[in-house]
Length: 180
Image (tube, rainbow, N blue to C red; front, side, top):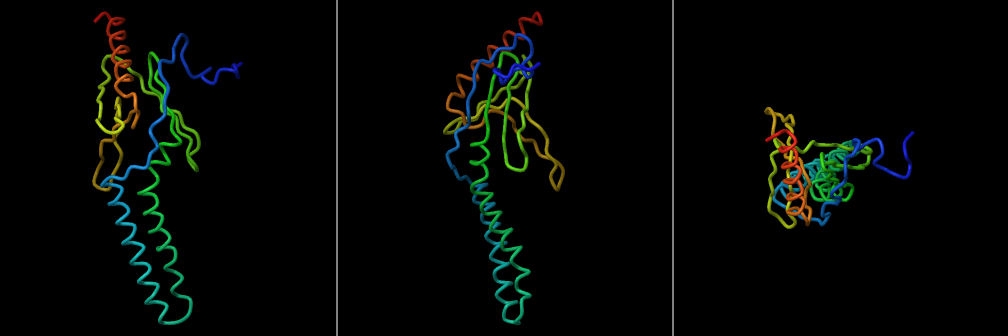
């Protein structure tokens, strides 16, 4: 039976210890990709608005078919500007002496807990920023023209260097236990 007083019961392996827990910085930061997505959404919504105005001159309610496109355009703008911060506000990080966990609780997607083993073969990279990010895994996502590599890790954490030091310690212990 699961111990209800311990939220990690049934998740952590026997003897696995939590070393660090944290959350990403959820401050709204807008970069080139955000502005590019928002610009696309504005063009999309603007075209729909122009189409609706021209269709309205013909009379009737035919112009209302443009409302869906106008709404989608505004949704693209809002998503490009606000989704990354919203996602970070609903994300939690945990590092144990064996694994890194990324937990999310997002609308429509629900709760999700991903774990990534940390061992002496794990490639760690620190991405400078304010605050920095620490990557320890990657995956390939399908695109229209093939696939692209997406880095996975603890995004925008203020104590990234300390967490990286802890991960290096985990790697040293894993190397020693293998006899390296």
